[in-house]
Image (cartoon, rainbow over the protein chains, first blue to last red):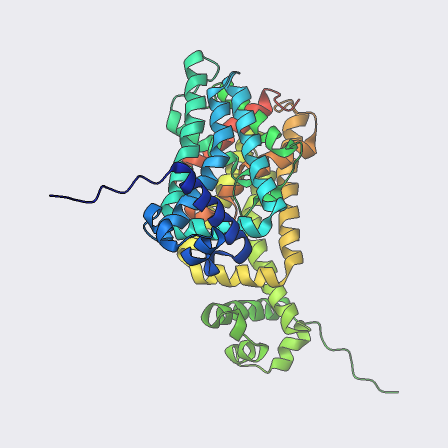
Length: 204
Length: 204
């Protein structure tokens, strides 16, 4: 019996090219007007090629947003995995996150709005993002606890408190009003207070 | 020459009755549909009587919102002026503010939305409210600094940091998602960290 060979797996650079084109089309036309056909036209290929890699418009959009979040996550993950005390890494991590958000909002507000709109169409990605941020903070706190740098009784409680105290420097609806870049003086003051509390055992 | 005697000043209970009626009418019909005539009808009086006290519909609305804010402010001011260490008063003050907001949002969400909408029509009242909250926190911090309970270099910086760290427990758009009443466990954890930082001189 002769069967057709299975199609070659899509080369990963095709996937990347499609995502980059989709991002470009989204930037130009906004999420409401972006179709797979538009993305295919931008790449001078048939939309069948795109459907070989992404099963639907929704899958393509989800992948675009996911890649956008992953790009933001990479430097944060590097800080968590990097050298330095837990206090120093927490400070670097939150100021990096704040700087990323402010840059996105101020350098290209329309694209930022586009991504916010896309994210709200894929709420599980918002949840994943928040879980990821939570896990990063939790890891730094746990490491600080293990070395004796921090003293607290309950890792969950400490994580929740640190994340709550920094909301205005992370929340997309507040970050512009709160913006205190380039020095992040307000955020640094909040972190200084919170970190001192972690060190002195306020939650022990 | 005979002139009419100046009208009697409106008795303050008339002012209160009008404000209470306006609140009731707003609660029933929402801000878009509330007119001075509706308020007058509710009181079985002519709208001329109301215009003797409030020069315009806008003046009446502003006074309703102002009274609503003043009612919320009274127990907070009592905490600032009351006994206890600055730390204890800060904790009582922020948990009282959070409880007030949560009660308003959950007990009568439509009325809360009505007041939010009215507030946004009178943005100077929002500013006044924020300035008032800022002054209250500033006073407790300054008193803690004066007694040596807190050690920090810059009262402005300390005030901004304490207010920023508590945003999710105060902001009308976040309070429901953040809601951790009746114990305010998350808010108490944030305050414990921040207050420890103020005591140990993290901003000194």
